[in-house]
Length: 173
Length: 102
Image (tube, rainbow over all chains, first blue to last red):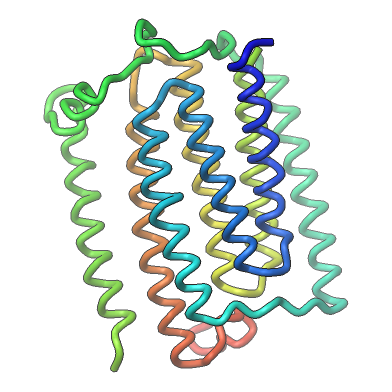
C-alpha cells in the first residue's frame, strides 16, 4: 500500500462523511462548512487522477467562489435553525430509506457491470491521459475536431446573462 | 489498488446525500447546498470515466470544466433570488413561499 492509495482512502473517508454531514447538520452555516470539505476533497481526487488543472479550477471556483457566496448569503438571511416535528420525522425516515435502497442498487450495479478499466496508477507526465495547460488552452479555443470554442463562447454568454440577471433580481426597488 | 468502482461509490454516496438533503430540508439555501452536492457528484463521474476508461481522450475533462462553470452561474442566480425573497417575506423557508407556487 503506497502513498497514492493511502491518500485515496483518506480523501474517500473525508468526502463521504462530510457529504452526509452536509445534509444532516442542524445549523446551515455548519452545512456550508462541510460542503467546503467535500469540494476540497473532490479537488484532491482530481489531483490523484492527474487532472491538476481541473483540481485547480475546482478549488478556485467552487471552494473559493461559491462557498464564500453561500456563507455571505446565509449571514444575510440570518441562518435560523430548522424546526423538527413529527410529520417531518416520518418524511425523513421515508426519504432516508429510499435513498439507502437506491444507493444499494447503484453499488450492486457497479460491481455487476465488470468495467474494463485498469486500476488507477499514480499520475506521471508520460501517461496518455496527461494534459498540459498549453494543450488545454489550444483545445479550448480551436474550431477543428475536438475543439471546444462553441461551448466556451456559450458559457461566456451564459455568465454575462447571469451577471445582468443577478443584478436585476437582487437590486433595491 | 484504486478500482473504478471505488471512485463511483464515492460519487454515488455524494449523489444520494444530495437527494436526501433536497427532500428533507426546509430552508431553500440548504436545498441549494444539496444541489451543489449532486452537481459535484456528476462532475466526479465525468472525470473518472474519462480517466479510467478512455485516458487518451479528454471529453469528460472538458465537460467537467463546463459543468463547474454552469454550477457557479446557477448558484449565483439562485442566491440572488433567495435574497430577493428574504427582502419580501423576511424568511426563506419553503413553507412560507405561497406566491407563484402554482
